[in-house]
Image (cartoon, rainbow, N blue to C red; front, side):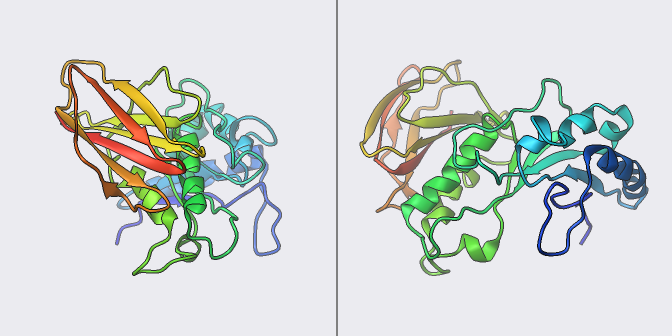
Length: 273
């Protein structure tokens, strides 16, 4: 098996009780200048991932600002394929994440998070935490890759024959938003829900993921702009009582359709032209 990529360091901003190594931003850049050419010279070349701070804001906003340091040094920037961060800290339960500066050429990935809901919770509240984290990462945070850590915790509260809800709510994204899909703009979203649409540039498939953490159902009318509209969209629902359950296909007329979202649920609408 070929090694695709290697991280320069795990959480260079976090003083841990286990084995760790601390770098400030300038030290990390100096290390990348040594490591990057070595990885690039391998056959096949190995991509470099950095800097993976423990807290998202340490990438762009405060602390050592590892991401700003990477893109601010032309040599370092050319060596880094993925600018990555972890999602711990005070904002990881919110709907926002710090955004990268305009013009960043690297891919942006979130590479580690687990949510500290009560141990054994395989219920929908644990699943909604996953959906909120992905939504916040791909919208405000601008990521194209989002990863949960670790597998044993991911299955907490369930098992192979009865997966916990977090497995299904991640599936509301990963099952339908496939490699190569592009996030597209959206406006007029009701404040009671959070939604993010994607489209496949190759076949025009539309996938709209809707998160309703409220205590009441919400009805929303949609308009899909353009000319290659899907003829129908199919909702896939994860809630307290459903696990990525496919609903009845909804007709799309001149790009318009309506949908209803259960309380405490994640719904993905999927339509193909």
